[in-house]
Length: 151
Image (tube, rainbow, N blue to C red):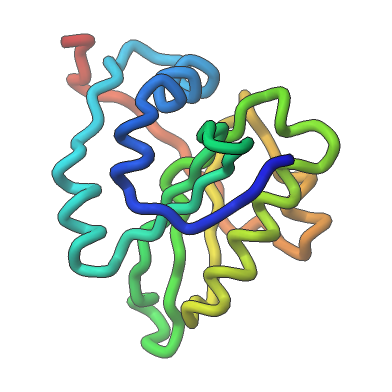
């Protein structure tokens, strides 16, 4: 049975095999996987990074990381911006993915978050689940790499 809980970012670091699995599924470019762990850790230390984990018994089978920030345009709004979310494929079926999203929403609301922003790639699109939860599309982002090389 899959269970969810808040966890320290260290749990994500300690389960780098999941980070690599996630990277291989969603990243479709030449950038090497080389996380800037120090930024995650320092942001967590000042209270602006929240992590949740999905576990099957003792095994970590998923994680998500949010950066908390005030909305520059509306000072009464705190945004939880999802940086990354991953759940092993076999746990996404039977509603596991949806339950993980709903868990995160409920926990972030308890922390006083007013707006949650989820990010996804076109290759792993869970917008249908978000729409069923009452989310709406707010922005579209396009990127262009200039000067980025596979180091």
